[in-house]
Image 1 (spheres, helix red, strand yellow):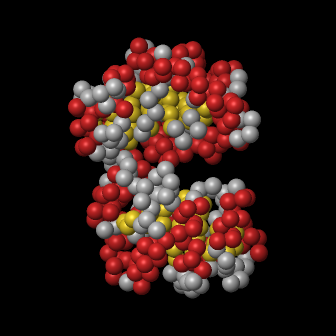
Image 2: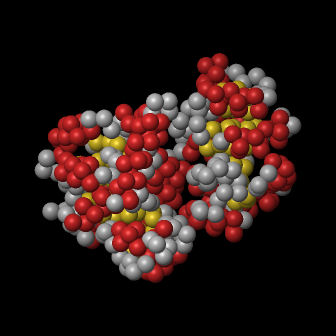
Image 3: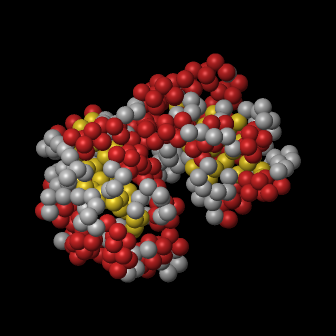
Length: 414
């Protein structure tokens, strides 16, 4: 009852926020008349094995993508339905060519869950990392639809493991099989009475290796960087940019590439104010001239994973807010990675700190000292580079383990 009330009030709050918030408006508009639209989308699924893969947002999509592409390769006739909860994932990947239908997940009410499952009628469901929607999971369990949770990670502080978390522990039993990132997550599941899991690792490692192996140069970035040392700051927020601006402004011979997490005009202008000799990528691409700029502001989406190739050192944003973004995109290129203090929830960050492949800072002064040391000490930088690359490559293989399970259980064969 409390859960259903929380879903109701959450949906109501988003609808109210949609009156002034563009993201909330997209969340609401994307779900309008969804039953009619989804029935039309599923019209071509007749007679095919239907796979529903759900991702909360863009980050989870990148984790799910290697599995999607392997399913497409091994089962080309399967009908793949990709769903998102957040507009930030849906809007960027709504035309993803490996999926037959890309949709918003309707809010988790009993009625919505029943209607959605009636429409898509999946043979296999894959949730990525988290998203424990009680009504959907209850109904799929009752209908005996296999549900896999991949790249899952658990921490002792989560509600499943609290004395008051029985309702949430019960939902873990509704999932057919967990593919967890590490042994600690498996131990927590065992303590909660869940034994249907495998320690497979994180599919993001497979994804970033695939991206790296398909790397192609970006001529304008080659031109901008030249023979200079380069700092690539990716997925940055305002707090991240503020710890870098002084260092950038007093090191005119070092090139800086800033790829902000959000590229709306107001944010881009604030970056331009901080970095005195900066130019936007769109302007540089039009004119072909960067003049005296030592900071390039990336004002588009989709380049970041390739930009890390050019870095002497990489900085990944989010560590002064809710948590760091994807550090593996930089590490796979063999780059020492720097990030802010909010990283405790990220297994790969803790691992890389332990082996000296990554570094955490909590202030601009700490950052400036560390950046200077890494840029000036080639041996120290090279050691971190080697460790970063080796770490990522040692963690590959999660996608293969998941596909082996799907094949062994014949989940997509007649």
